[in-house]
Image 1: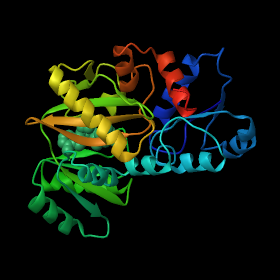
Image 2 (image 1 turned 60 degrees about the vertical axis):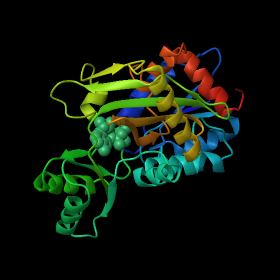
Image 3 (image 1 turned 120 degrees about the vertical axis):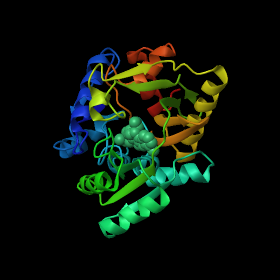
Length: 307
Ligand SMILES: Nc1ncnc2c1ncn2[C@@H]1O[C@H](COP(=O)(O)OP(=O)(O)O)[C@@H](O)[C@H]1O
Ligand SMILES: [Mg+2]
């Protein structure tokens, strides 16, 4: 099998950390693993393709999680872990994913799609009129909270927009949701299983689940399973299952939520969530009795349709 890690995106380091962990924990008796970095090794991957039975892309963000690699692997006739081109592309575009959620009556925060072509003044006027403050400014196609700001004033929003446009030509401005943050992983192809929800509580002084909170031990508390009643656990699990199905995901996904005033709002669905030992999906799997190596076996079996 081929393990893909690295890539071109702003989440390259995260991918390398996840990939290294996957490499260490894969059952060496079962798999003969060759590692490729799509940023440098595409030609070598093409050469190796006829001898590969499955590919495990441990990539995040653009050119890894957005359908590009998935299309490339499909062209090569290879089977791979995770979603195909359309679901990957839809999920990495936060607006496209929200359109699918809306069509399926899944709750989302009110938003505005902004583009560089509009003047900053016009953008700030629209934000004030439609959303108010605080407002969440997100580049359309980044992950790991890269380029994301919670702006409390027009001045902060202006700076946040400038920062976000350095990363994407389009930006999503979203109504700030105040509440509890949760995430739910789903695994499976036809028979889907929602793993126990995890509640994320950023450390004191951290405003939200930002890049540092995500990857620095101690900067966020992750409670798994989340302290939710049985019926709320079922409700959020069903929302994650519906999102996974509506988006056409395959193998695995992880949907982020904010629980605000009695409603679970969907923020986004990740098609290739982090796979370090401390990442959320492995934690949820463990809480459900699935060790990390067993989780990897399951994901590879799903890629091969052996489940
Ligand atoms: N509408 C919102 N209201 C409040 N907090 C938000 C909102 N959108 C995002 N956040 C915060 O920002 C983090 C990252 O947002 P998310 O949409 O999941 O993007 P990504 O994880 O891909 O960077 C969330 O985990 C949450 O802490
Ligand atoms: Mg997220």
